[in-house]
Image (cartoon, rainbow, N blue to C red; front, side):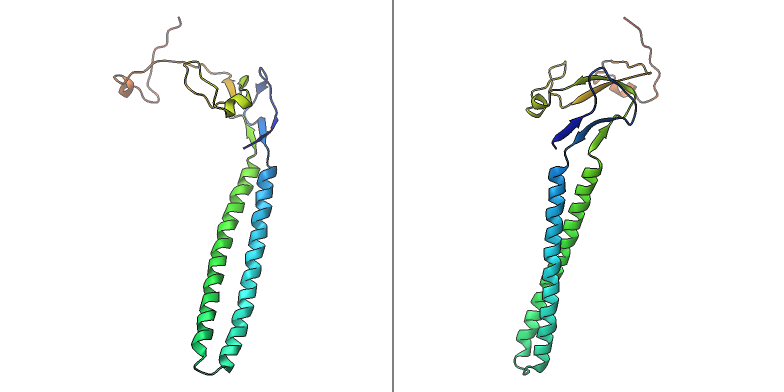
Length: 175
């Protein structure tokens, strides 16, 4: 996705639910319009096929019995085309719904109270050039430092990881 607008700056305090940035939805809107045009085209095709079926049924009723299998085969083919177009319409509608949801979620909001600690250089982030302090690659655009709670950073090894679970009491000593 393409970023449209950055709404915060480094050092700014944010509350849970405050908007941080907005994605550009112009290309998504164009995709929706294109999909709607395709649905209209398929509906027109279905309408035309139904008209052809009606005409073929009239012709089949007036035709000699030797010609009726040919008309019947054409009618069956048109009915199959209609069913395929109806399926394609449902698929396109699901795609439109997904794109609409993407537009509705274009604004990314803070999920906690805190202070904007850092905002990454977007070009560097997209190029994959950002790293964490430990040297591993990072894909974090905005880092928020939570307010009001203590954050404890610790080291766990393969040998003692099974001793820890959520809610386990631990002793924390300040350096």
